[in-house]
Length: 170
Image 1: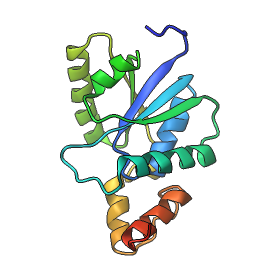
Image 2: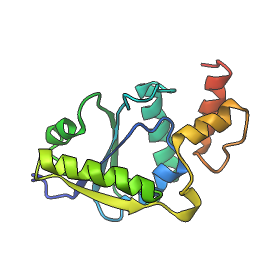
Image 3: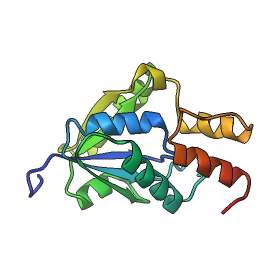
């Protein structure tokens, strides 16, 4: 258990890039938890578009500008197993966002597996707002690659970084 008695949760994901849907989940999780560590990891089934340091920078800037709920948010990269990160941080709660039934099925299995591997781990699911139910990072990257507008789908700083990356700037 936590030594400082604050309610700590870990919100893991690739955040490649962070979307307004991710920020919606984070903001609502801050109504439940005092501290949240946003753990940026890599999905072995995907090729990351942004480096870990780029994702950390984009998330920190977006959080600073868009998150209105009080609470402590830290953003970190971890290249290993989520459960190892939780142990390292002395945390036992995972926050996961859900958009659709298909997300629930996948996340439910993952939550059960995590609990099987470590019975102290709990997963809290937060439903996204309807307006973000279709949104994911892959869709954002696809729209950007074809010069479509991602305005309103991602924070303004991420929109700019997507354009810069695709135009070879930086």
